[in-house]
Length: 229
Image (cartoon, rainbow, N blue to C red; front, side, top):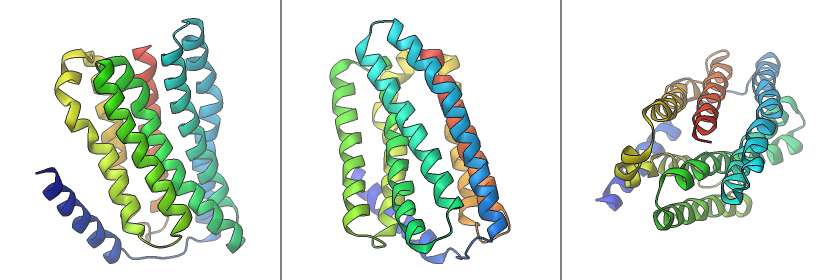
């Protein structure tokens, strides 16, 4: 059943990517894209010390390091994205594009890590997160050694990572407080709605709108993690 779902997801994603209209962003659009995720960098600078200080004071190292993974993933995504959209030299832009795509793996896994450690039994959390971070390094491998090939695979891996939660939904329902659950769900919906604008990035400033939904999703998930501490 899982293999069948993976095949369907792969075919569906390939179809979306191959049928997407592509257009280089204008200089003004790229500036707007850089500013939108520059705000994400600013949010990271303000928000990261808050959660890191709380977890450090708790003397719970597993929680501290798991929240640090989220903070690092968050900072990587917004800093890489900001520089990628701001820089115009083709060679630098291509390298930053790879870094930008790799950082997404770290944000997804980093978001999951503190929540799974908090709400799942230790053995289940270990298996889940080992699988999750294996996918991260698999994605990195393909991005670094197969540049500009298997573009569809990245999106498939992003989606698989995002939906891995279905495998542990029952124990999470039993342990996650309702308030935290709604913050998590709201963040997921923000990312999902934003995909519509990403797919239509050929329209003027739609990519910037996509950035807005991504930033909103991150903020909502930050609140979920903060409420869990």
